[in-house]
Length: 357
Length: 264
Image 1 (spheres, chains in turn purple, red):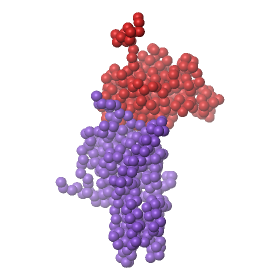
Image 2: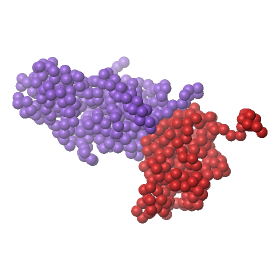
Image 3: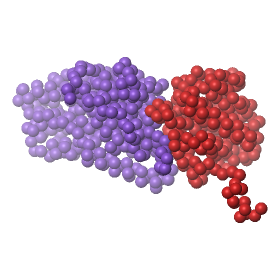
Image 4: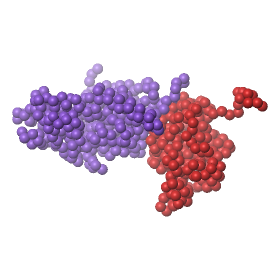
């Protein structure tokens, strides 16, 4: 089949990819900088194209609970929002994880705390990979660093969500949502025609009825549920780690960065290498599960002298890098806050300063 | 007639719906919940739609609905039943979806979800239990708690100057164009139970005929929360609750049919 190319905004790519992934429903609420997702779905008439339901809810709270309902019926459902909206959704995200319902969540994140700014930020790293809502749960989290990946992670995200019966989060940012790049459009997949056995979509004749809940009043029972959830998370950690290594083969210093900032850091290592410094880039693609072992292996390599985490926040992922490095090598940090994005030269200079190069 | 004759099938005058499980109700003896729960099951059984129905049980005394029914049930977060129902109904519009919500759930924490689902005319059935108190958490003030009524969070009685007025929410919902049917019933006498059953049947038939939102409010008791015996609780309900929340149809076939004592 001939490939289809298109110049698109990241937010538009999410929407187009959702239609093409055979999504059954999108429930959302407008918030900058991700508003184009629902606008695009309405504009191209997703409902006419595939029968996909697109509905504007009265709040993020309502949108995510609509997601919960559709997910309970075994349908492919997604929502997208930005940082303050994700905070509002966090209650239901915990319920989704507790009730083991698959769905796709997208955070086109912006600077916080509070109303913050509409400019790009990665300050929701902790919220996404360490919890966000209440209870011991994990969101399988993918971090795209291009408009192409914004599109590609949609179908992949749905598949992972159904594989593990768990919500999947795509953690992007305002820059990726707003910037335009040429992408290869994913192929159109059919919508689902059969639904999982656990789905509460009306008990078929002769079958046991189903129910969806995250409630267990007996602690003995609820501990078993939690143990099962933890086993599932261990399986994700064994199976779903995704990352990219750029020029790490001979690298003495390694920049670790995810999402949009990894794109900028790629230029930084180019600049540094032109001056004779052996710098590599390690890009975690799955933020949970985090590529722990891979970073540990790099830290154990005698050639590698240090790491520097570059983030659009005050230093969040750097804590996971330090857990992986376990003190074997120095781990530095450079970040810009509140919606500011560093230039490649700023990152380059921060690296020289950190390691006296 | 001897016992061996009484138990013969031809002498059977009443049995629980086959859509009810054998689980023990968690409702207090004398509470109206159990009657409403089984009446819903009877209507679904009589309509023969048990393979096409999904119930939503949010937080409150309604939360264990999935234990009692032998059809599909989804438990929802506190207040979110109408949003969850919307999410379900929109992807499987050919199925029957109903919510079962208390006054705290529907008229306090879930007011926005309720109001907007009704305003969109979601083709669902909302069963609303109004007993003027938070039963599950042990008897705190509800939005529907009457003026002067004592609860654990208004132990000297609800003072409307600082705690707000009893929220008479169904007449407000009845005014929304998306809402097709609103009725207020009770279950303290056999005659009222029969009326409730008729109302529930009407509501599910409205959904079958794609009419929009149908709301069946049941003014009920909470003898534990009110600190009264079942009989005294029912008497108190008739005396006080029915004054603020009078029984009857508010909207039929999309037309407001009665001035339901709109909040002043």
